[in-house]
Amino acid sequence: MTAAGQSSITRLRSAELGVSNLAQSLKFYTETWGLQQVASADGAVYLRATGAEHHILVLREQAEPALLGASFAASSRAVVDRLHSTLGARGVPHAAPSDLPAHAGGGYGLVVNTPDGLPVTISSDVTQHAPIDDPSKPVCLTHVVFNTTDLAAQQFFFEQCLGLRVSDTTAAMVFMRCGTDHHSIAIAHGRHASVNHLSFELGDFDGLMYGGGRLIGAGRTLEWGVGRHGPGANIFAYFLDPDGFAVEYTTEMQQVDETTHEAQTAEYWTSFPMRPCRWGMARKPSPAMIRAFGGDLLTTPQGIFGGMPANR
Image (cartoon, rainbow, N blue to C red):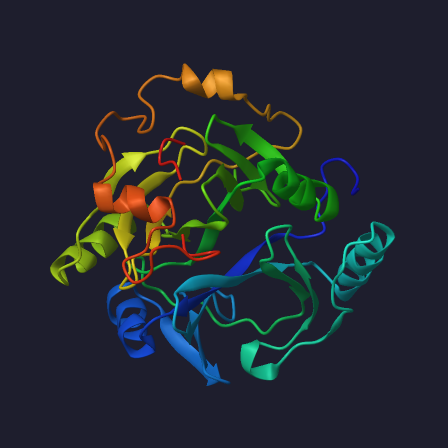
């Protein structure tokens, strides 16, 4: 277990999606969503945002769409090596640290599977880009929400093995952080192991609205929002990608002070006024978005990480 208030990882880097039609998904995520291709190799395409991270999304074509992996940053090679020792001492199977492929930004890291079988890469020294000035496009991938049938096992893994901290707990989810953002992941009670949604940070509210306008102008439906969440207090706007993955534009995530933050319980959030939108404006997500939150994609009825409750 890591020391209190410390984490072996510092931020979420990226996610990898298996998609049913690579050309279609690539067109959506570059022309509409606002990412930019930086590399391709071995059947995968790597996409960056406007921030410094080498890439925040990897797309790979396969028969059944699914979340194929997630990647987090460590502050140094020494941290990766220390995590290797920690996982070994706990008897957690994982790949030994090694140099990572240049086309994926290089660096040094290891891969370990969550209890649900999702590969997670922890890496340091990955190539960074000069930022791009366009507030209407995502800056980074800010959080991923996983559905699981065994929330306790997933929480134990991320908390005790990787050092994330619990920010808040609701009846539906546990929100966990590795930096100052209120959450980098959340774990939700689900019918099967799946991805609930991917969330992309915009620089400010104005940028989120301009970006959302671009999606609507491209014929995409706003499935939920614009609103402000309860836990995390972030502003949200949800859409569906071509396979039916739930994708979120967000901004103004609550910043956590480790010395003063108090994690609230499910009872607290059940009685919190105006949930799931603090403003009382967003109302309920669309039926299509509810299905996507639960992992029921457009192109497959159910996959291990093909997509639970919207009521955070």
